[in-house]
Image 1: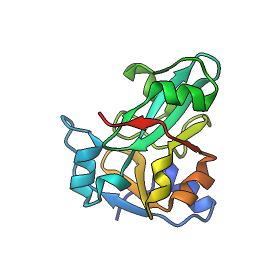
Image 2: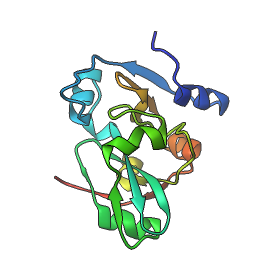
Image 3: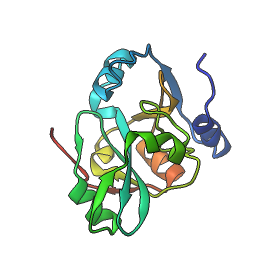
Image 4: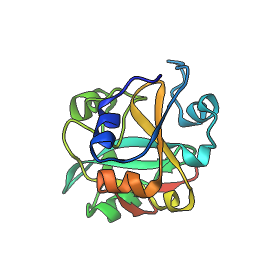
Length: 159
């Protein structure tokens, strides 16, 4: 049985159905493609959460398909910024409470605006980090958006 994380407890409080999926962690490869393979999920359903900072809005989160790259210009437009950059790795944990490879869009230390790639609307289930390495949460895209107040738009591109 997977351990309950803060993200999972928040979904419980909101009465949102989800499934915890555990997988073996390889510290040298924390990529979403590897997570998908190890957890038996199609890569189209595995979303990674990135931490960014806009020049006007400050810190924000972006959730994109695991096999895609964040389109910083598109994220800037969607979030009302002129410029957006990902934050340095050393800032991720102090800002979110999560470590690299375990950043969940649910349950960050502070509630940041979340922007989700619109491709999420084409999948039945989406999988995001449960807040620790080695554990994913699978839930409906509508429930993820409801739990986070996420806003959809095209914010990713092929690598």
